Image (cartoon, rainbow, N blue to C red; front, side, top):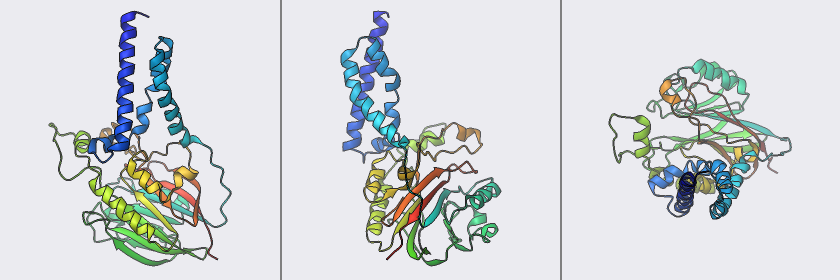
Length: 343
């Protein structure tokens, strides 16, 4: 290899190394800064260049560079490997199947979405961003989900819907912080003799109300990224953790959280409750952005998991999987939990 090319490759390697170590340090110390918070959602991808960079460093005699890359490589293998560890879980004694799905208010294939929900066989379905046709419930599913908790009076794109095979014993609605643009739901059902609290949540959108900079000609993706803000979501996570800490019943929290499992906000939730997909799923489980069949949306690949089913004590995840595309920019998530009977 020519000396000039070798020097360029080594310089690129050191630049990548400095940038990656710097980012991981900033992520640990300054995750509340908007640009660090934004990039943290995609931390996994910071390890990807090592697939090429480490072999090149080794083959071109850059020993020190290769040595400095080894800790990153080990960390990357651990980070990626945890998604593919086989999970052996005994079959449930008292199963409860849950689906969470951000429908998208402008979903053009509601018939297909309704058919998928019917075929899912879920016991409970928690929906966010329901379209106008579903804001009073889904008549076509009342034969199998006779118990439905809707939000018919909310603005389009903000309403939720709970579908249940089991009677809904109580329903409350609340906001997570005063800035919440959504009305969250808490429903109580009884399953196998155990009362369970279901939280159907949708956290604040990715962007804040005031863009830092507007790019012209207008580009939705770029301007959304420039307006990225975690301030309200951070406060919502605080409020949600306070509520679940005081929850007297076994609980399930599911919905669209608008941050990935590589974000530090995820770490805060994971310290207090169990992520059903990490406990029982396989693979990255990415749920956003789904292919909606539109050319503009195909420019954004599916590269983040932002839809979750969390559970507290008394519940154990048995299986978890991501569903197929059914007209939304999110994929549905389905999990089977084992309910520990009281007494």
